[in-house]
Length: 166
Image (cartoon, rainbow, N blue to C red; front, side):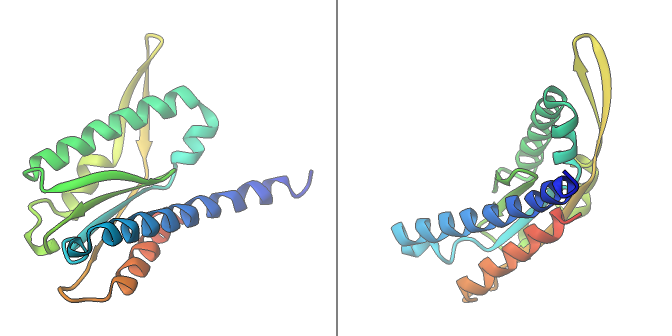
């Protein structure tokens, strides 16, 4: 029983690692099916919510409603940016917005994402109001035109680990 907290903490490292592997595999599979798409992915915003797993452990329903609210805000950010980005969930506590243009051409800035998506969420459950604060980290990764796919995927994995590491 003394090792249980350490074992649980170790599980927190496995999730992002699996997410990085799945994302790289999905991207490699997509490029394999459509080789001309390899150069289309130019920039990615990696979003990590560091306290999401603690929220899930403390109250599953509050976690679920907070994720719904976060998803709505994320979709609104993408719509505001002219729907040129494609958002998705990378792992349990990590999300990504993929762009097919350089990050310099993306009409939404990291600071804007942080202020819009991070911070407090007012969640209603069973007639009670709950304020949930999300600890959001954002990192941008850009693939230079003609840059190596392997180096780009490695950078994505490093960014995903960086924004979710506690």
